[in-house]
Every structure is written in C-alpha cells, then in structure tokens.
Length: 498
Ligand code: UDP
Image (cartoon, rainbow, N blue to C red):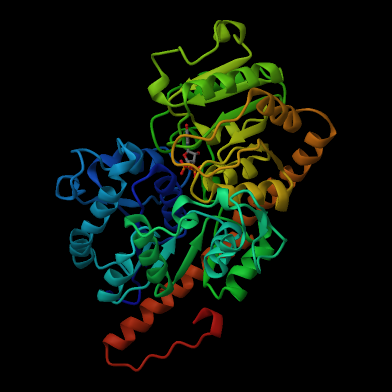
C-alpha cells in the first residue's frame, strides 16, 4: 500500500459496446484531468476504439493508461474476433457474448492483484465486478450509461409491474409512483419484461441489479439541472447513492477530440465541416441511429422519401453494410439531393456535427449518449426509439423536457426498427425545423445546452459532484491505509452517503 502522497488510482472497466465504451473513456479522461490515475481495462480488438477516443492531441495533458486482457471468444463459443457487442453476427449469440464477459473475471482479478487500484468503476453489465472489488477491499462504482429519469422509470415498472394490470399491449397505463404522470403501453417495454421471461438476459439483469445494490454507488452521465426532479427521486425515494458528473462528452473541446470518438469516422472531418460551413445556422437536420441499429431496405427508402419531402438539408448516417449497394435509395435520390443532403456510410463524427451551428435538428434513436449529446449541442429532436431504455428517453425528451417530437413508433424491437411511413418522417422533421413550435423547442434546448456547459465548468454541479466523489474515494483509501497500520479508522457520514 502506498504513502500519504499516493495518487488515487481508479480502474475503469467498460462493457465492450460502443455506446458503453465511448462515455466511459470520456469519464476516465475527466478523472485523469482532475489528477486521478485512471486506467482503462479493455480487450485487444477494442484497444483502437479506446485509444482513438483518448487521442493524442487532446486538450487535457493527463490521459488515462490502458491495459488489455484477452476476451475469451472461443471458450464462450463465439466466433474468433467477436470482442464487441456491436460485432455479434446474430442475436442468438448474445447469451454466449454475455457468457464471455463473465469469463473475464479471472484475468481481471489477476490485473487487480498486479496493479492494486484503489477503486473500480465498472459497467453495470459486469455483475461480478462487485465481488472482485470486495475481494480486493476496494469500492466498486456502477456505470449504467443512462439517466435517472429512465432508471427510475425502469425501477418503478419493475417494482409495481403495472403492465400486468392492463388488458392489451396497446392500453396506456401510468408508471406508478414516478413523478410526472408518465403514460406508456406494454408494447414499449423490452420483450423480456413484457413476457416475464427467464433466460440468460433476464438472469444477467437480476445479477446486475443485485450487484448494484451491494456496490458503493452509481456514477451518472447526466447533470443535476437537467433532471433534478428525477435525480432527487432516484437518490431520496429509491435510496440510490449517485453522482451526476456529465455530460461527459463535453470534455471533447477541439475538432480532433470531437471527431475521433469510437470508430474511425467514414468522412474526413474537414470535408464535413466545409459542407456544414456552407449552410445557414439551424438549417440542417442530422439523422443517426447510434452504433448498431439497422433498418430494412423498404424502411430506409421510406426515410429517404420522408427527408426529401421535408425539404430540409440533411446529414444522414447509414450502416456500413449499405455502403456498396445503393438499391435501398429511391431512384435518382442522391443526384436530386446533391448539395442538399450528405450521406455518411459508416461512422460519423457525431459530436462535431451536432455542435456545428448549421445543425438545428436531430432524428435520433434516443440512445442516452446521443440524446445527451443532442441536448448539449442545443438541437431539437425527432425521437425514433428502438430498444433498450430508449422509449423512456423518448418520454423524457418529448414530455418532460419538451424539446422534441415523437415520430410515432409504438413497439420495442431488437436491432431492426419498427416501421414508420414517409409522411410521419416528413411531419416530424418539419415540426422540429420550421415554424413557431420548432423555435420554441430550440430555445428551450439551447437553455439546457447552456446549463450543461455550466455544469461541467469549474464550480458547476457536475464538476462539484466529481470533486465530491474523488474526495470520498480518497478518504476511503486513507481509512484503509490507517486500518492496515493497526489504527481503528471510523468514517463519519450521513445516512444517504452510507
Ligand atoms: N456515434 C458516433 N458516430 C456514429 C454513431 C454513433 O460518434 O456514426 C457515437 C455517438 O456520438 C454516441 C455513441 O456512438 O456517443 C452511441 O451511443 P448511444 O447511447 O447514443 O447509442 P447506442 O449505440 O448505444 O445504441
């Protein structure tokens, strides 16, 4: 164990999926920038994603270290090289992928033994991380990658099971006890919740929940001012210990930092900026459905027709598998849209695009990172949720914050989205880009964007919550140090910080 001058050392263990890794790498960078020694643990094939996101010409001088452990693909029955959730070739392999993440425990514990960090921030989907941290006598903090609104909604549905008291999938019900009278239907619940299934996924979820209850607390990529009602509810009513330290994406300040997140972008950042620079402020709508969503060809065609009919300039990100074959586009679409629409086939520099003043709207699948990045950039949204907790995020954007409109999808689906007609797409895009309603939403979201920036600046709420967390982990380390030297160490705290 080190001396009193010891630099607090935190291990970060992100779940291998882009939507989980990108924010956790940003988070590790935030800790490093505040003088903490941060080490990110990942697997060899995910290493470029992590180092790409950390970058080399960053505005912060202190950057996290990276260490790798082998991902047990073959042992779990996965194809060789399947180290990221987004590269799973078929849904049927998800249980094997989860199994592989469980098999990581042993080699991860060898790393703990070798590096003896003082604390561990691990993704929710590593339930065993709480046991590993316990074994080494260090606090384990959970990273969910969501907001307190959606986590509270999930918890209320799980506790009260209101979906069991309705007579059909489409009958609306209020989420019991959740502030705001939020109404949903059974159809927007994940299939395993709706059907009360017992499978690898539900068992893993139960283990995650149980491990979270035994963990030190939860770190949240959100900021207090955005959702103070739900932050208070989450902490005070649901009794969770949580720190709101986001938006973490705001640690990316220059062009390179904003461009190099996750995968290598499929467009040169300067070419992208040149295109955007030629457009008027708030005149471009950006369409992207996260890191792994996909649509059928007829749905993509419908989207193209809806966009064309809306008359707006756009940047549209489509899955890389559509790169070579343009059968999915209506005839002559790209020719007609020349100069008006930019299609990025593959990976977009999302934060760079959203932050450009030409972008005024965002058609999003409501992944929490995208949602928060949209809020931080001050753009109004058309919400098109697909799976995970995205339907709750839609409610948060459209009903709680009033900064977006729903495109109208009604059903939770895995991977391939529910179908939406071109008229609904055109209408949604026009509503966030034209007229009084659009202006009202944009003014509101620009206020939230201002609040987000203030939250992460020195003295802002997220800055202070991060300080408090670092201080607390430092005290926990000191108490351990004293205890190891035979001193009876007692930490004095309040009930909620217990
Ligand atoms: N992202 C990106 N370029 C893309 C697609 C996604 O930079 O072309 C980033 C996006 O900025 C966000 C993350 O990938 O940080 C996606 O996370 P989100 O929670 O929105 O969705 P998920 O991919 O987990 O469904």
